[in-house]
Length: 506
Image (cartoon, rainbow, N blue to C red; front, side):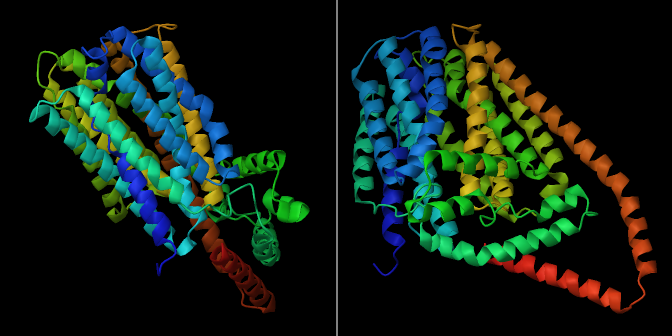
């Protein structure tokens, strides 16, 4: 092939499409509570589904390290195998314990998704990052939408039993499993297996970085908020990684070195108030999103039992997936200063999400539930796209992977606590309607948090503006155009040039 990035991208897209093609997904709760498995609502909601949350949380960090150490491809193969085991058990085995093991393997499948989304960055050049990311993420949405639509058509038109939808999903996972075996093995990773070739680039960048940072530190009068906008969180130059690589040479980094790198990057990344605000929303909202998506089919089953009426879960999942994709695509055309209005926007959209969840819980009409779910999922997809962009804008790929992992881990930790207290029979074991009232209240609390943050930021900005204007007038009046002024201006231009050069090279 003329383009070296095309071959792995095509294989990843084939894998992503078939692994996301799951006609049984919109009907999972109905299948488990139907004649095929004959499980009760309490068994499904309060005993089986929570296992996925616990296993996902327990596996996330070890899988994160294993993915980097094994260079992605083996973990992608593990994900494909886990999906086969998951849907094989869904077809063949019976009983609560067996379904709990099935949920564990599904937790393995979701925890290993990081390998699929990060592999491509290790085998293609940075110029193709945006292009291949769009391909890989879009194809999974298309596969999910096609699977949901196919499942609904088979159920509504062909009157196919739900068991056969699970068999089709299993067959799709088997087809997907063949693709990753042909992927080229990655020759580099984000933390382990660092090479001298990369160090050579760093040795050129470090003097520039050190000089630029020193010049920045000399401007001690710059306000903290303004300084945060200039802190190059995407730099990989004068940090722990460079020192470790100098010591280790071609051998790369050991586990303890990698953990020190992670801790240093963690402290530097989350020292930015802007990144911290978006990360807090990401973690809090993703926790609530997982809960609603995981248990919404159980709510629909109570509103409209599938053994008595025809259900349209597949159409709803298809529409909500496509709406989420359109929202994610359309946000790139919205011209808003997210740095100034981000907190208030998060507040407003969190209110929309809270109202949607409240209507799902309190209006006993399946069409209201369906519509509210579509609004809920589309709004979340819109905001998570904005949050992803805002977080990734000033981060290197390595630090973005860290922030993504930390945010997801915190979301899962919160979800585990919420599941343990609200859902699990070990805790309160509440009924599904009470659960969704708690989820609606949860998103309302998120809205209040970001309303307070937005108002505080506006008040702070209003107070700073007169001081800045006064300082600007004093500066203009003190300017006399002497040799010292020229030297100061030249020094400022030099600092700006060094910073600009450093940002461009990174």
